[in-house]
Image (cartoon, rainbow, N blue to C red; front, side):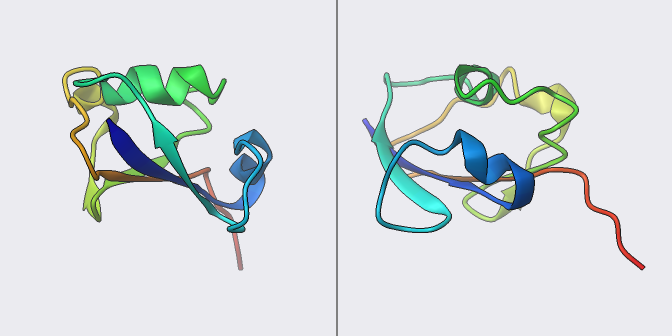
Length: 83
């Protein structure tokens, strides 16, 4: 199935090659759990601080049971600091 991934800030280094700066369209197995997608890009749980699927926040404890579906957009941000 086809989904899109968006990695931001320091996580951009994990994106496969592509035209868009933040976003890639990829193929994954049907029903892939969200946490397996994150792990497949070698992003640690500590690095995946904010995770959205189709604009909806997914808590860390829900990522194992959240299965992805055709057309989903997964967006991931690392912890951020500012002042």
